[in-house]
Amino acid sequence: MASLTIRDIPDEVLARLRERAAANRRSLNSEILLLLEREVGGATAPPGAFYQRIRERRAEWHGEGFRVPDPETLRKWIEEGRE
Image (tube, rainbow, N blue to C red):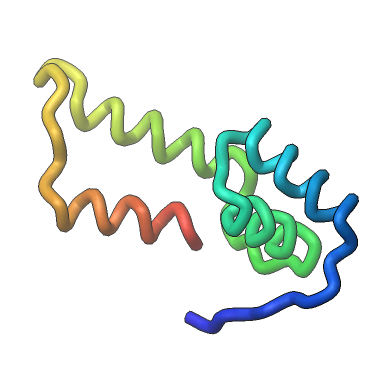
C-alpha cells in the first residue's frame, strides 16, 4: 500500500480534522483515509455493509457465548473493513 505526505496543511484544517477524528473515535490517519475514499469514490462497500458484517459476526457467535476469534480471523476481518 502506498504512502502520501501532505505539506502546508493550514492549522485550522488540521485542527478540524483532529476534532472530527476524535469525535468519530478514529485515528487522524483513518479519518483522512475515509474522507478521501468518500470524495474520490474509492469506497466499494455501501454504507450499510459495515453494519451487515457486524450482524453476521454476531450471528456466528449466537448461542456460543463470546469467544475470541483466532488471530487469522481477526486479521481477515480487519482487512475486510479496509476495502
